[in-house]
Length: 348
Image (cartoon, rainbow, N blue to C red; front, top):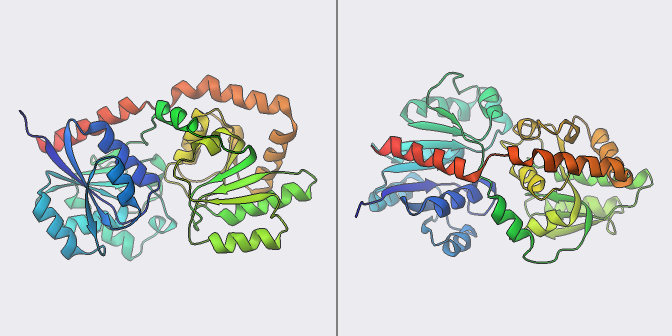
């Protein structure tokens, strides 16, 4: 029996979100070929890893001493580090182990020189591969070479069958407009509330829901109250399975200031739900076949949302456009074949 090569996924976060979902999907789909383990700060993610039977190395804090001990015990063939902090720490702790740096996001600081961008530039030569979820990251990051052979554009794995199955797992209430994501600065949930306020001000009654948790939850709750929108916006909090919310909403609004990829947009398209998004990062590429979905201002988002709510012909045309273009989305099997080939190249 051939011994499986070991891959250690390293993440700084302790919760479940987009990057964590990608890691769990990789582990779930490739677990017959590779032995996977997951290292992060101890937190809510532990439940998800236990559910998917993924070996977990919790850390009390994201520090070199703890990661070095994990590497010493697990002895990985590859360290697959996710995002910037994990990539830097993995280079410091990995010794001679091959390291993959997987960048899922494009925060504003990557566009200029600062201590973080200089630090990443210094570790770049120690990385075996740099995986990017979108070309936007490569175009915006000052520390990434445009012709670096280590760079691989990966996109994100999207399991169509799983998403459709999970969307049927319970009956969610019907909503006109959905916000789905963390309540953080990146996602700009306040913009979503302002848009709903403007839609109502223009005379259109609307039933909206915000599914997600984060450090701006209190601020969002206060803004909803000050805007008199308690009967228009429901704060649903964190949702373990958000797909029924997508399926039972007339449209998804994405109000992020930056997005590495924009996975939630793809998930909505799979469920035939129209998307209206602030033009940001990887969303421009993800929605390139749906130019009507991309907006440059809050007012434009508001106008398109009202049109989708009021103009049935326009709404049906948008949905038909989604259905006709859906088969062009990247297949999960193609993604996993690509990821497996990268692991093989680094372990030969």
